[in-house]
Image 1 (cartoon, rainbow, N blue to C red):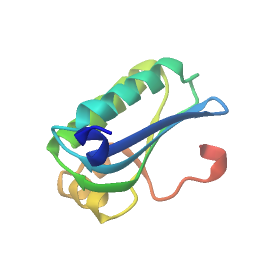
Image 2 (image 1 turned 180 degrees about the vertical axis):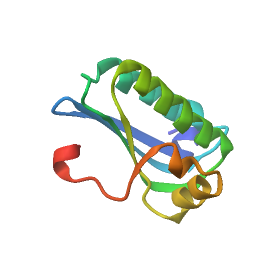
Image 3 (image 1 turned 90 degrees about the vertical axis):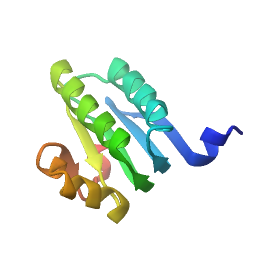
Image 4 (image 1 turned 90 degrees about the horizontal axis):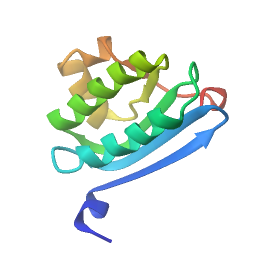
Length: 117
């Protein structure tokens, strides 16, 4: 296990035509490229109009580099004809989204039903 593994765990699965990316840990300038790489792969295999679902319920810290990754992949999914759905989870994610008004830009959902995943 590398130091990055202890800071951010990311898993990508395919559920029907949707791709679900789950992340747990800290999302900052050191770990953001790891999440971005998983989202790149998710975007490559998703079948539009099915969404890419990003589950951030396990995130304990969300820094500006993480916010930039969310915005970049939100825009990329729109270009591909799909949607990036973000399950914000707890305050560690919702607070930075609200403070930067990205909650008004991104597709943030409080809870994802199993049919949306």
